[in-house]
Image (cartoon, rainbow, N blue to C red):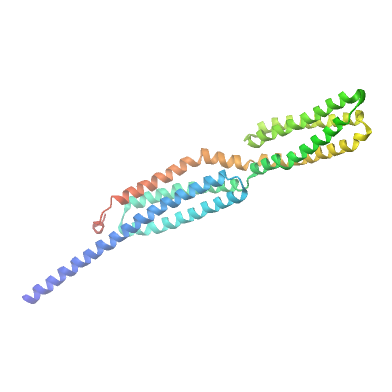
Length: 292
């Protein structure tokens, strides 16, 4: 009889110990799930922030660096998702599994859009067009101005007023093209770009017409300066053509537009599922061995 009671007592203790062990193991898995879900949220926030910075970056190097940072954070998100799934399955957390599945679906949509945004952002065609406009194109325009001002300064006699008027007309025409480059680079619509280009073409024609007229009234000594002005105008228009090509690709404009219009809704949807997941895990207690 004593032996029987001893055996029963041992069995009860063993069962209690096993139950206690199950509870401890499950609670450890819950703690791990909470930690991973918190890190998942952090990594998603880092990915979204890095992507936004890639769009707003003002150099190719920084844009590429932020895009790479965004991709690394998204890989960390996927790793955390893969780690959480099996934990929820073992703990039989149906609600948490459902929230994780919802996040995965929203994140897939987010990732597809974000990849498109980053691919556009790192090309920086609008930024490159702006640099050409403010750099080499500006230098060519200044060379055009300097050459024509020398022609005007050397003008004398009855044709001096005509020379100066033509010089002013040529310079004004070129400056008009320069002024129109900035709105063209920023313009998202092709039709509006076409209207700007029509005005630019008319200004180029006016500048070339003024140069042709100058050749007939300026002094023979001014011909080298007129040749320099023509060469500078040709150089400016070559750069201008490059600017228009880059501007039409509009990668910075399009990436920013997608970031401001479509991305916020997907970001918020992902954030909402992650917050709900963390809230659900926070409500879980140590009684996880009972099927919770």
